Length: 175
Image (tube, rainbow, N blue to C red; front, top):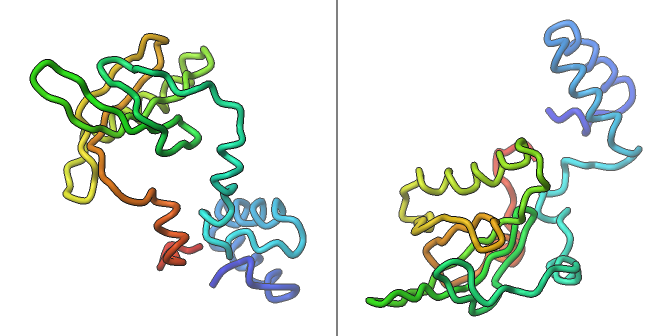
């Protein structure tokens, strides 16, 4: 049963029982319910449908794409998100060239704590090995000090486009 689906006395009774059985959880549920404006069904909509359209993201003021980051020549931007931008890039070595997805992370704003997420962003892919996950080839710092990740480039849709085009739902995830 979902708390946001209950109304009136039914919700009040359910919350009273939850307070007796799980007081901490009840407080958290009440805070979530209170945070949603009246009538809003915050959890009824899949999270990707609440994201701004790609066109809105593209309208944000971003610096122009760099020509190079480390040993990678930027070809074009292929995506962006809260942590940074992703470019199709070409690794240019004396012996070979290969296309990579180059994720350039936004520089954190000074505080040591703000480096935690970008460092995790660089560390996590290195531990993952699965045929459905792009391989991490390289990680480093660009000339401006920002972190980058060079990942296997896989031709195809980005995740949000894939989900939206197929009208996928989160099965069993509680949304």
